[in-house]
Image (cartoon, rainbow, N blue to C red; front, side, top):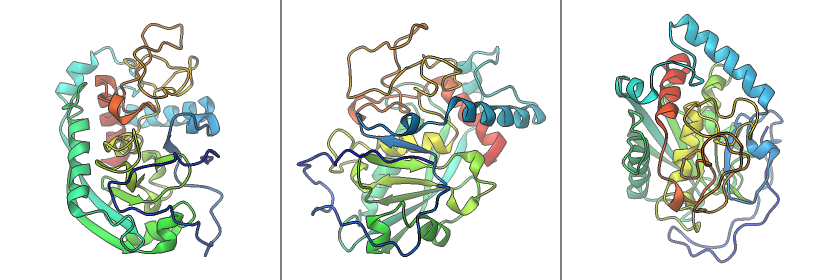
Length: 315
């Protein structure tokens, strides 16, 4: 279960989406579930959750063992970058994956009721990110908006974690290969969260990605308003870990072409190298915690891993 950071919201934000003071926390209609379905998140720099909101090394090791057993049964190589074929070549020959998207706007009257145009900009940002148009690898993964739903519910909007087990089962559409993306207001330092693909079988109705509406392209959260929080969370939905998973030890993020990184990146440093192993920290990678203005790319190895996880869990 992810722990929320205790730091306060960044002050003096200038809204570009529907404005007004943050809503007060809603009174619970149901108790918050102890076994939170979401496991990965994006926090603003300086916030600290449990192991930076990553799986522990032991938890990740268990996930990888199960994943690689499935891939072996499918006749595919492991997802940890140990394949002898160069990742770039393998990615170029991978079959294109087109993912249908149902976008659910949770709002409280005008607050958070983002326009359909804003939703389409977010989908375009996903396609640019995963298509390599901002830099890095073309992952051969694309997204197609199928529908936009709108739910005017002050409680769900004000405390989406508390009510996650209420709104998701009612709103979610499609199967294991369908992305359900929820925009809402999220308090504290949290910018969004996602479920992992290997959780779908046990809790299919909880599957999906939740983002702070202020993090969408043109949103009001300073330094985090280019839409890359969705890019980051969808990366988790497709099976990627944070670049700083396991820190300088263990097996890292299980992708061979992302150098090990001890700590998440704060801001957009010109250089950062926190581990003795070769390579500078991947501060421009979408799976770090850098500012949106700093993020540009996935690696070919991350693209290959997403395709293999897709074959294992979402095909």
